[in-house]
Image 1 (spheres, rainbow, N blue to C red):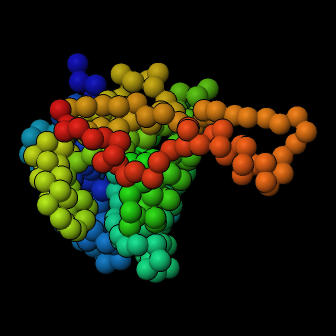
Image 2 (image 1 turned 120 degrees about the vertical axis):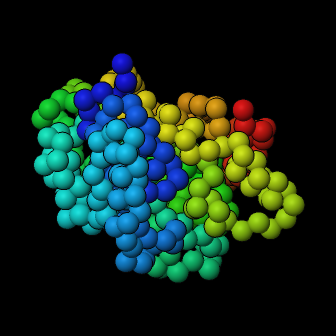
Length: 305
């Protein structure tokens, strides 16, 4: 039996990359799919087009699936409300939301404009809030619902030039955790995925040297959006009804469970601390456990499977 048989799933950013692959796979796994995509550019800020989402919806229907398109923006609370209403009106229900919609505006922090910051936070963090807030009461009332939100190793580990993106993606981790905690009693689940996949967003990252060129080539060939979709669709389905509040990474054919912040080492001083003793004693004791400033490639230093 297909894992989403009889379910209704909203997929944002569903016209390209990970979103498109999630929409197609959800339909193949039996779901009726609302394919949402503003149809804008990678940097956001343009008016967009209804065409890309409709193209994916037609592809699903041509393959015998059920789908409808939507071109509202996740940054619009009214637009997100319309997505939910469209699912209810067209398919008489909603059981899961997969939310990979996003943009990039990469720049070094000291060169970042307020617009670069605001726009990325609005799409990623506020967009995640909007879709969760619009659906949460429906999910709670039916005592069934799954959010699959998207974080990034740019936030979990770090990446130069992505302060706005990293901040938004770490905010999503906190949002997902609380939604999961508050929803546990009524079977409302939320999980995060940090995806490794070639997409038009990744294609905007400049290639500065031979090593980065080789890394990009590996991503194109060995880290595909359809591989991420396998995990996202599983998490959206009843087959993973006992999985919630977790962070996963999907990299090629590898799936990782990612640790969440917990104390790793501590030190106490009975008579209390002074700035001098903190600097000279506390930091000296803790320094062997410090996390270095390496980027994602320093953590995932091997080729994907």
